Image 1 (cartoon, helix red, strand yellow):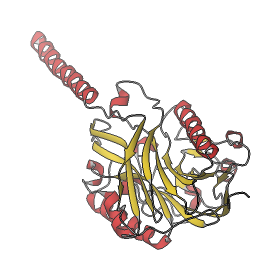
Image 2 (cartoon, rainbow, N blue to C red; image 1 turned 180 degrees about the vertical axis):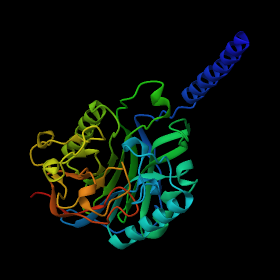
Image 3 (cartoon, one colour; image 1 turned 180 degrees about the horizontal axis):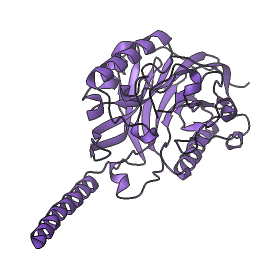
Length: 359
């Protein structure tokens, strides 16, 4: 009897090992491997876009939408919670709530992160199309994948299919848009079903000038040991400074997954055993460059439990904001307090002016 049991257990284990090996092989063969730089299609190119020239001003809003799955009633397994995905009703409510809020801001440019185009966790809805529809035909839209996997096998129940990324919407003409790959800190086989972070770069021609406004939408590494964020931040700064050295105006914004200078004083880490962001230091910025963030309102909350109306019951961060080149003047920056109703991030709005050439 014992031999039969052992034989049966061995057979089951053999099947499990073969299935796991087969899954890893399939994920390896189908792994998303983008080129270092890829052109991104810009939708609505024929629209009568607003012109922009040196000396002009614009408003940019950055918003991590959390794939419409991380609203106030959610927690998340990677942050110490348990949820893997929202219900379809939650996803619909969050998506429509976010779309409505975006329509209220009236920004010239939107940097959106974690925007799904076809994912199990968001029930196959193309969120990028929905946000674009809500803002109207006066905007151009570009979307770049930073997570593309037909089956993510973890946790349980598994995430399943994920196709998600960055979306930039602009009232101004976009001459071209590019996906610029960032370093990936994960090795095989984890990398096969993990994010492939990138920058979504949009080049806006400026009226009466041979220079361009370079809009850089970003979402840096979250769940790494810190080396990935550091490598990605270095590459980001190298890219931004190279564009500025061409004479261009540069606005980079999004979810840095790193706290801005002074943010830890405003929102100290309560439990270092839970998710802790990296730290942005002022010394990463060349002379004349600046961060644009608002420390008076948190831009993100930890998802170890649903949102607590009592502020003392939450771990907050300021990890969303902007970097501006020396020829971009900061007029104002504000984190809009939305109480994390539809996503775990509050939007951040910046108003800037492009310095006139020669100043």
